[in-house]
Amino acid sequence: MKRSKWIGMLAAGVLAAAMLATPACAATIGGATVTGSDVRLRSGADTSSVANVITEMPAGTFLLVEEQVNGWYKVVWNGTEGYVSAQYASFSEDAEGTYSFSAATGGTDVNLRAGASTATSVVKNLRSAGSALTVTGVSGQWLRVTDASGASGYVRSDLARYKSSQPEATTQTQTGTAGGVGASMAQTAQLYRGYAYRWGGMSPSTGFDCSGFVNYICSQYGISLHRVAQDIYSNDGSFVSRDALQPGDILCFGYGPYSITHVGMYVGDGQMIHASTSSTGVIYSDINSDYYTRMFVGAKRVATD
Image (cartoon, rainbow, N blue to C red; front, side, top):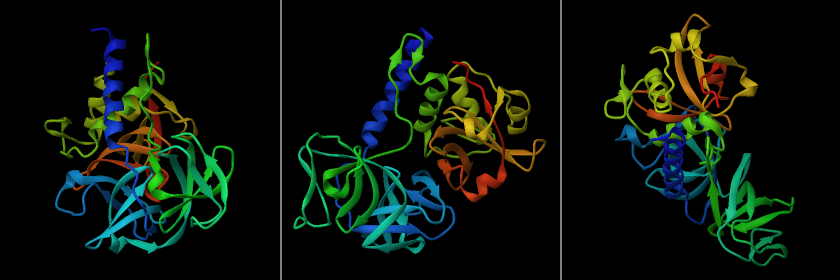
């Protein structure tokens, strides 16, 4: 099979998975702020399964809350629905986000209003389904938003669809995907979120350790890496600065250039996916969190488009 066709098939699989994972319209009840450090967002309201860990969130992370269920909040973070223990989040019916994320109208003729009520004036009518919105806060069942033209106001939360900031699948071209091999690798890596961590593991059937995970993803694109994190940093690819990161770059962490203890793959927007620990498996993490900022040593670009 030609390499370009193979990459296109992988990208198509990522797109299908992303479509299944897109949160449907749901009414909010307010917002919450993460109060603990490295708090886990889970796909279910329980701690019995390692596989249900979606990511870990730093203190101060802003969440939209859809409902409270037996000591858990059902939330939306970064366009992804999940659950967080109410023990580690502070709820408020009216909350302003410390950062914004994307959404779009879920239907036509959605009214952007001056306040969080149908009794307030209409600022603008958003005629097209899928009109882009930036969510900056919440007031009960209403989202505080700004549209693409800069108009600000409120829309009903059940009329919005949230959009993840994780890179989307790109369109196939004759030489691969429009985003390049690195972007395709990052997209493929995201299909393995939730897989188990296993020391020495290098495949989905056995689980992954950190270097085994990036080895496996790169091998799907004909790229061979050294087996351990230290050797990847010392020998593979070319160095790239932190402010020039691209999806597919390998991020290296540790105590210095001769003491690399962990690696992950950058997926864009300050996020990496990595085989973290035996208690979390493969998850997303914010590379700008205090821990990963402190432990960051360097990055290697192994994909040549």
